[in-house]
Image (tube, rainbow, N blue to C red; front, side, top):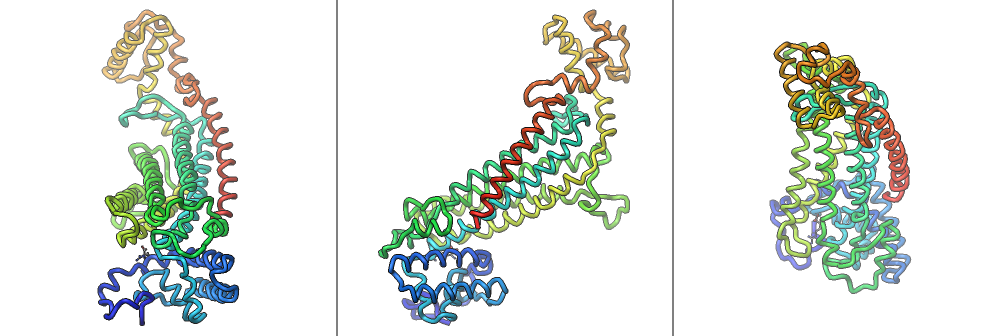
Length: 471
Ligand code: ARG
C-alpha cells in the first residue's frame, strides 16, 4: 500500500522501521478527537472558500461515517499508515474518493496531533475534577460522622497531641481541594488551539483560526505557530498535577495501611476492598492502598520521562515528541483506577472509635496541656516544659499515665498544681482547647466541614459547566 507521503520516495520503507516509527498502536486513543478536529477544520475551509461547499459536505459525511465505524470498532488500523491521523485520512479517502485528499489542506500533522491532545486532555481533566470531588465528598461525610472521635495525632509517628479523627480527614479534604484547584487552573492552558500553525510557520491559505477555536470551544488560539506545535507544557503540567494527586493518595494509603494493622486497629477496610493470602488463612490485606502507594512511582516516572524527552529539544516538531503519549495515557489510566476505588473505600471503611480512644488514654499526648496550665499560673513556658518532662519521666518509671497521678504526686513537681488539672487533662478538653481557626476543637472542625460543603457545591457547578464545554 502506498504512503500518503510516498511521492518523494523510490524505495519501500523497511518493515522494522515502519513498526518502530508507528504510533497507531497507542494513538488510536485519539480517534474521536482527531475527527472532531477535522470536522471543525473542514467546516472552516468551506466558510473561507478554500474548499467548495460540495467538497466540504462530502468530506463531512465521510468523516461521520468513519466516526461511526470507529465507534463500532469496525476499522482495522494499519501500522503501514503509521498513526491515527493518516489511518483516518486513508479510511476517509477509501470512503469518499479523492476529494478526501482535500481535508489536509492548510494543515499539518504537527498542528493536528497537538490539537487532538488538547481536546483529549481537557476532557480527562474535567473527569478528574469530578472524581476528586467524589473522593472529597466521601472524606467530608466520614469527617461529619467522626466529630466526636478522638485519636492521638502524631509527629515523627510518635503520639503528639489528641485530635479529632474528623480533623485528620479534613486535612485530606484541603489537600484534595488544592488538587482540584490546580486542575481547574490548568484548564486555561489546555484550552488553547494549536491548529492553523501548520507544520511550524503557519499556512499560505486564508484560514480562520478563531473560527475553528470557537467551533471546538477553545478559549484562545496559540499566539505563535512555532510554539503551538512545540508546546507540550500542558501535558507536563497535567503529569505534575497527577503526581501530586498520587502523592496525596499515597500518604492516605500509608495511613490506612498502618491504621488497619493489628498494631493500630484504628480502621477496618471493607472486605470488598481487601484481598486474602494464598497461604495464611487469617490474612486480610489492604491491597488497594498498597497498590495506589506503589503505582505512585510510575506516575512520577511518566512526568520525569516527558520532562527528559523535552529537555534540550530544538523547535519545532521532532519525532521525539511522539513519546509524549504513552506516559500520558498511562498516568490517566493509573489515576482513574486509583480514584475510582478510593472514594468508595473511604466511604465504607469502619472507624474503630473505642480503639482510637484507648490509644489516647494510654499516652502522654495531653502533656502539652498541663504545661500550658502551669503557664496560665504564671510559670514561664520553658520552665513548665521542664517540670512536665520530669512529671512524664516519673509516670513512665511508675508505669502510670498523667491522669493516674494523685494531686500530691503532681505537687511534688510544682506547688502550682491544683485539682483543676484533672479537667484540663481530659482528652475532650485537650481537643476543644485548640479553639483557633483551623484547629482541632470540635466547633472549629464543624465550621471547617461547613466551608467544605460550600466549596463542594462550587466544584459541582464547575463540573456541570465544564463537562458540557469540554466535549
Ligand atoms: N504520530 C505523530 C506524533 O504523535 C504525529 C505527528 C507527526 N508529524 C510528523 N512530522 N512526522 O507525534
